[in-house]
Image (cartoon, rainbow, N blue to C red; front, side, top):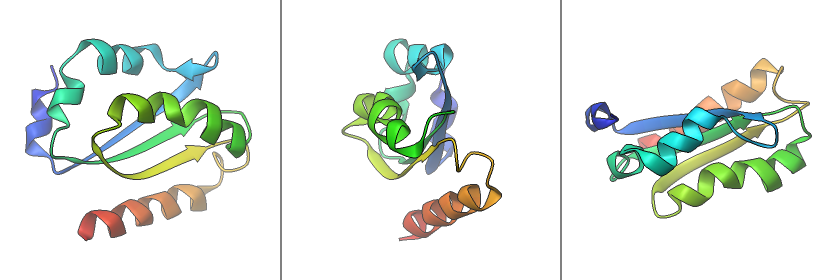
Length: 104
């Protein structure tokens, strides 16, 4: 039950990639629960973490998270791929982007 999301204005949703797809729990939550309906009117930031290069992550994996949330207010997306997942500055840059866009 994702009704607790009503207490938040900004929601970050992220997933590691396993076997070329989103983590099973998140995929199930998006498709079979009230997660999507409870995101209505929220600002959303999305990210994925994988061992592939960023280009592959942007093209293959991030859309798996974006497509079910197509009509929602997604303010930022980030694919943490092979070169950026271990770089602390990548996370900081993403957090700054989310902060700046959420403040508008």
